[in-house]
Image (cartoon, rainbow, N blue to C red; front, side, top):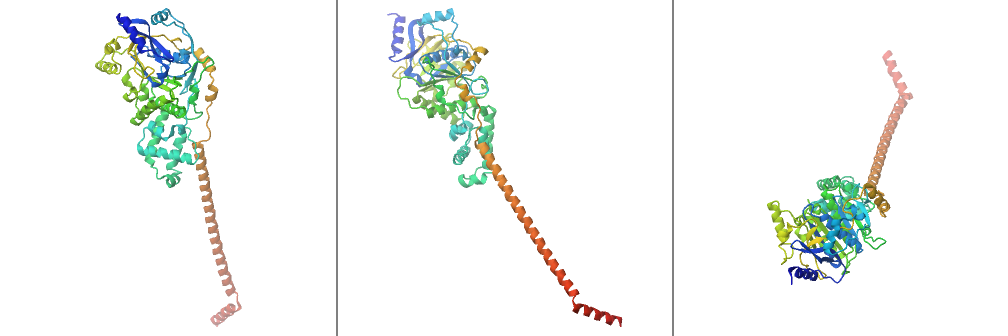
Length: 511
């Protein structure tokens, strides 16, 4: 038996699946594509998360595009983070190319050009369906971890949430939260101390500075209403294809805190609202996190713990997370150990640090009798990758250097007119793009403060009136006493006895 035949049998046996699957491409041996040695990923294992890694320009984005398209064709909705702004072309069919036909002939899969159902979402002021969440939905624990506050400050945030719950003060946006914090150490200080204990002004000041820092990264656009319903990410179009939701994030590359805030909110909401799926044989939703290092950049230890916990638990809800980044070392070990599918494009060995990273990367893949993993990591071409997945029993599949299939949609962005037309067709814009500012903690506390100030002014005015009344009464009393004395003097001076006495004194003086 030839080496090629043995390898062909090795791949087909290792990637055999009874259930439905998506095809990534065909395995390669000694730089040659082995036609029909298909590398397949069972739908059943796609909620076990994954990684797409490789140096710039090696084809990571196109691999993401291929997987998203095939998932959509299988009726599985997808959420993509479009940080570089190059994914909108999924909404248009590929124009095709002779090199694409040649690639697919080698793989053994016919090429079919098609467009896909796409919904454009936005986290900022860019055009698209607006994504928002309320402060209350975050809850005190998650918000404290995002703000990276101390244990004492986290306790104060918990008290603030409890006070708002007890007093029916909705926390919708950041101005609500700031107002309650200010109220807790000013007008409402005595009220909160009575029921919840003393709150330090220094601690609330520190929390307020953390909130301002978050606002400066654009979080004031994200917090508020109308809150996005994560179930709207799981739509299927009229043809039974999963909708590909693309979040435009080109303007927040330098705002890692906003990005991680949004991602944690989204994942926490999905985990909290999606039902337990069990072993259904297919995922409910697949999320691709492009430029994944932005999630972990500047993240505190507490925030990292939260991310790792969600990654471990969310797969039970039928949700798969796929991290797209340049180097696997960008992803923490606690997350990396949870990943089932790994698609590793070429890495570059320009420096000692690069060579060390390649060595560490190679150790994350199964040992293969057909490949020297460290060597092949630096020799892969564009659109080629090392693939390792999980079979239907959760076992690692054979390592396969794979010629990846080409995207069926356009490998370029939509024109401005095409994008405008797509946005006009959106079924979610009318639901989420109207900005709502309902009565919340900010307005209610201002009303409460104004009422308290009015009552205080009323009481002060009453006190002043009583003081004036008392002063007036005292004056009248003194006036009455003076009048009585004068009358008495006059009475004495005009009496007959006084006159006779006075005349007698005068007569004596005249004699």
